[in-house]
Length: 187
Image (cartoon, rainbow, N blue to C red):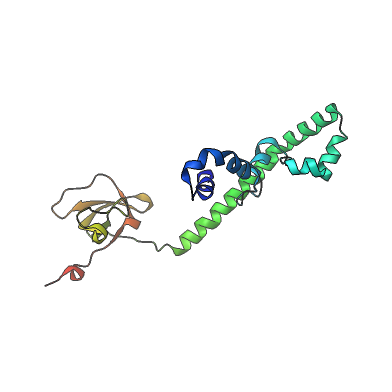
């Protein structure tokens, strides 16, 4: 995330990144993160950062804290640190809720694939997006055909070549699709 923020700032002149790093770090530390609803500074120190502008304008928070003695200020900071565990747990709960929402959306769009032993399948060229330098953008995205050799737990399969050589590394069903010989019949 920090790298993305820095990339946005130095997009026009990438060689200036060392000069911009402090400003990006400051902005990142003081900005509220969407997923947790808190700034990273709050999650570390238990209270929000005092901006230089708040000191020069004398914000209500700064005026209130100026009335503290050093002992009172120390007690207030310790009390905030004691509440920090609860705030971190709240932020963690928010992250879990967000992950559950993303998983629900993903699972709603996913169509479960199931194959039987002996069924002909094609396998996605892995890693996805790999291009053969000979073919360039016309590189095939599927290879095969293969035969499903063994069904494993969790939607994984062990496949074998048509000639009979078994692939020892299992493959997730989302990287397989049914092979219909008529699709490939060009004659």
